[in-house]
Image 1 (tube, rainbow, N blue to C red):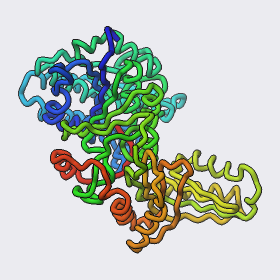
Image 2 (image 1 turned 135 degrees about the vertical axis):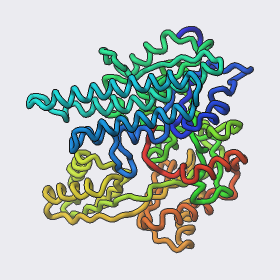
Image 3 (image 1 turned 45 degrees about the vertical axis):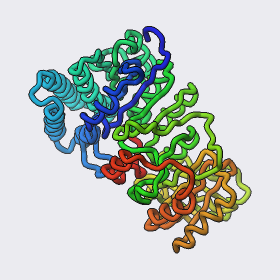
Image 4 (image 1 turned 180 degrees about the vertical axis):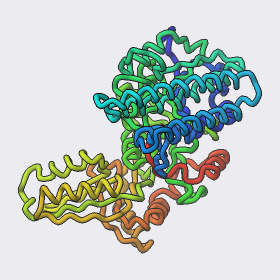
Length: 500
């Protein structure tokens, strides 16, 4: 990095935000930082909304993208047709952004080169693997990485063109390793890219995907853009890291509890961010948070559609002055795996085989509890994977009784949850609302408390707990712009998988 990094911020723009081109330009990219100066910022951008689903596969619907079609090999040419469709979709995005301006030709040419380069590569790989000595499955992880990279390359290149069009000295920083032979570590790739940059006089636009020997997709899934952003902030010695999202970090999903009842969170800490990640909420990827926390870099989460709001500052040492519940959130579709065996009593490490089986089938543990002869794991994963887990455990423990049940978990989270009588308040609120509590998990270290309820009671439980523990308290209401953006993005705050 050339020159001083004093006052430098590294900022990530999410997929929904970067797709709202006019808004993100006005509210983020062209908005002066201090004294009318638009520089001293480094931006990391996600792919346009929905683009990664087209390139890989749709996380929610399961609709296959290019990668899924290539990996399945059910149709030799279906992936190529899909690649052409994605290329056309990317050019449609370019047309919507640039119209008939000359920058559109540059944007289209950039995409054409990448699309046809990928097509040639996949055709060569397909031919190579038609010989018995080469196995396609051995190369699929690399194929996934290459396809994922295209989404961020597209948005970063377009963003650079847009900024140059408006007179800013923007630089496209391609971390995707396109046509490069060397495969450095993530830190090496970012460090080398930053070495020639002078943030005082140019505006770097980094791709959210970085090709590295660790394999971002393999290591971090769809959260890779936030890991790239985090490492860029740490390596650039940034004073602040900022994530621009399409919603405020707030006390609950406004689509559930109502815009008039929900409150923004002005400050919190990385411990709370970890709890949110465990509930699947998109505050920040836990590995990204880890790097920022260890480097003592504060993170600010801002609403792209409400630029005058300061957003939520997340730091390592913050604790609220008064104990309170900051956020009510949770997971609706959770599978409770109840393992009962009376031979368990007094046996050390009895659940080792359970944990090993869950790991082998890639089933995530949200939380767990146990007593003398019962261990219950609350799981997030496909029903098919959980059934395989049960079948495997029945072979290892033939005398055990194993049962599964669909439930929901609602979590009360705060930097200091030592509210007098909070357990009684929560139980009373749910009881008054006519809900049965299937489980209650509370740690001595008061950062979160979880209740297990019927899956159908998920939203009603959030409403009841939010009304009892948050509403009417001294918290920050939404600004008009914040409320409008939430109304536009109804349900965007709701728990979902981490992505870039």
